[in-house]
Image 1 (cartoon, rainbow, N blue to C red):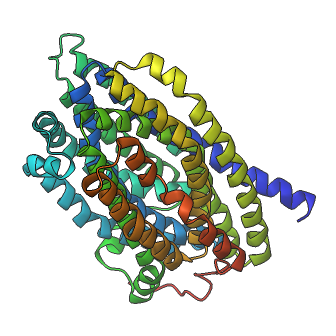
Image 2 (image 1 turned 45 degrees about the vertical axis):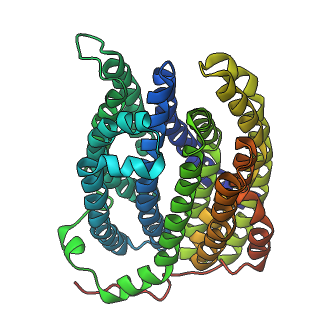
Image 3 (image 1 turned 120 degrees about the vertical axis):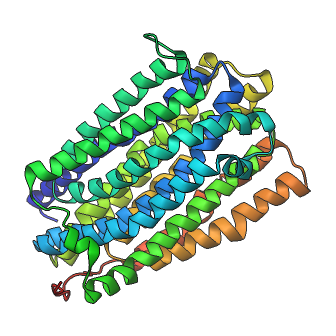
Amino acid sequence: MSINENRSFRKKLVSLILPMTLQNFMFSLVPLADTVMLVSDQDAMSAVSLASQVAFVFNMFCIALASGCSMFAAQFWGKGDKENIEKIFGYSMKLLLPILELFFGCTLLMPEAVMRIYTNEPLLIANGIPYLRIASFSYLFMGLSIIYESILKNVGMVKQCTFASTVMVIMNISLNAVFIYGLFGVPRMGASGAALASAIASLTGFIFCVYYMHKKRIVSLKLQYIMKTGIHLRQRYSKYSAPFFLNQITWSLGFTMMTVIMGHLGSDAVAANAIVTVIKDIVSAFCYALGAGGAIVVGNELGAGRLEAAKDYGKRLMKLCVLSGLALGLIAAATAPLVIRFVDLTPLAEHYLFIMILMCSYYILGRSINCTTIGGIFSAGGDTKFGFICDTVTMWAFIVPVGALAAFVLKLPVLVVYFLLNLDEIIKLPVVIARYRQFKWLNNIVNDMETDAI
């Protein structure tokens, strides 16, 4: 790769990764704010942590759709085909609608049943019910925003998305304080206040997305493409996106089962897990950005037919994700003493928390590599079946059954169960690295794709 190509790669990657890292970091501050503001009430904090898993699963559905959308948008953008970007945009919105209906309906009308999936603690269930009812409205705007942002980022509007997210997060945290504590004459709402703040902030974020889309008019959401999509595009979308969608869903459901297992090990384990999950997400902000940014830069090159450039970009991304994973893992572990000083938990919960944070070091390294390869490099070239098979086997053939066996049959100590549950990112690394070296992800998935008539 020449000096000019090196500079081009760095410029592209930095222009994507820095704003995306900031955006991911800002989003991770929301559950941190919830945890900090509710930390004086351990049961309320634990209930919100469990109830928030619904949002996690919902986000995985939406992110799966958005990733499939982004996979094609990145290659179409490299090819210079704006019309098919709009068609992918419309089709993704069409697929999103039943997901919105399902999660909105369940959390609004059956919050108790949803909470019982995660815990059998009556006090946690009681705290989680009002939270879920209010949070149900945030899912509507959150889902729409995720699809909008996937398009905006692929057409060069990453900075605008980051600004919108920053405003949204600041609003969320500010409103958290107002509603949770009852400031400025507002009734004190406790955990329910956190849900209301999220709903208002999500609406604000969606308004920003719509504004930027119509202001720039690079592409637009057209009703005709929501109502009807050509069969050629649908078939191609299903071929490459369906495995990615299934991968995200099976992985997220497996991750949720991990939370369910922890949720049945007592309130101390739940409280410690709630805090360490926030720490993981904050430290992993760069990992997620590297994977998402890598998918775009590699996808652009593949769509333009520059396969060698895409291959070189993939090699550089691999080196970067290993180095960043090592550094971020050490940073996570180093936060343990500091975090313990600022939490107000029972002695047993604090002990769990300290050891769990130390365990983050190996987990973050694995997450960094897997986010960049499976979620970034492989998906850029449509190599999505591998990710689906790899993550499904790892999660459902090992992590979930072994974790459940350790917790409920062998009744092993909480920290042993937690250690086993956090091996998912590590045990698949040899297979993932071997797959990367085969270069089966070097595919142009839009080169022979014609524009379908509507």
